[in-house]
Image (cartoon, rainbow, N blue to C red):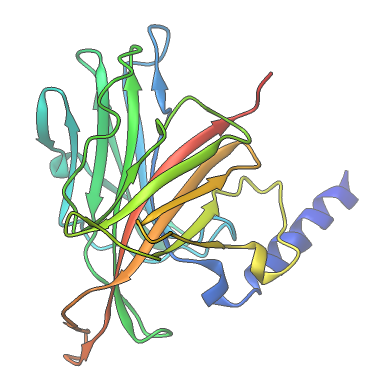
Length: 258
């Protein structure tokens, strides 16, 4: 037992020592479930962190988000006042609860405050969303938030088995982005140690129509981040104009076929 524990600890340290650039910044928006049924708890819990999912951290400080809400068949609902701060690795993150009142597809989304990354000399804004199905509604899963950068799913983003091919189209200002870079990360539960930096964040390119695909090899939460540079720079905390990385993120969950 001690040997197994020690080996796992060494694996965590090895992952944390990988180059930071290889770890991949991801805004997490993870619900307690992606499919809510009659026997499920009526209140969904959502956790918002800015972190490196595959590496298991370290977490980065989140300022209060600009927007946090949900889009459903009933319309758009502002959820900013439901956010509760908590700490991860000594950094601020947020939690929120949401109680379902009727069947539907619920698209939760966040526009975080811009984050200054001195190691890359740029500001980062990751517009993030996740779709939850309540009571087998199974429709409306392809709704758009209207983010400056957004991934529109071409595959229903829940009810996915391990090995399923997730497909999406990257859009900026509502138009497909040819050959956009898409980073992919698995939210590590501590069971996997990346053998090299290249395994921490998978990198794929969209085609000429902005479309991409990726087969997910393991159960859990997968984040897809389409990264583009904003047309206009932004002032960093020192007042200097620097580039802005805009990310359009979507989170999907896979399960083992048992």
